Length: 86
Image (cartoon, rainbow, N blue to C red; front, side, top):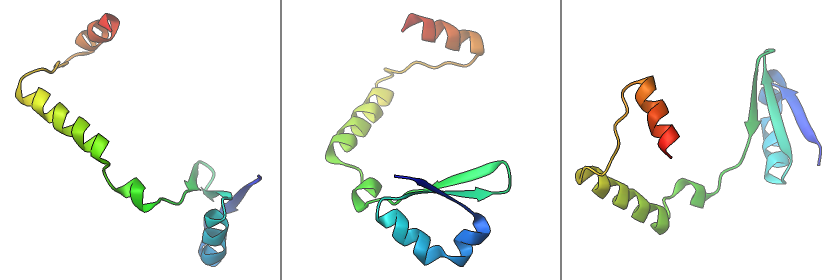
């Protein structure tokens, strides 16, 4: 599979065609100037929803916060010490 690289102007002119390519599994990179580039990626409905498993993890994390089971790092030195302890 080849990667299609186009300019932002080409994208504007041929949006439907480019979206159709991405929907078929092609990888498209849109260049904006010399230093910026974007990958066009389709998302699925399930990508925008929180799964029950993730919801449980979020609830567990919120409970840990309420119970004070967290670590607060305020300085670079504290961060280094924390990371070294892992």
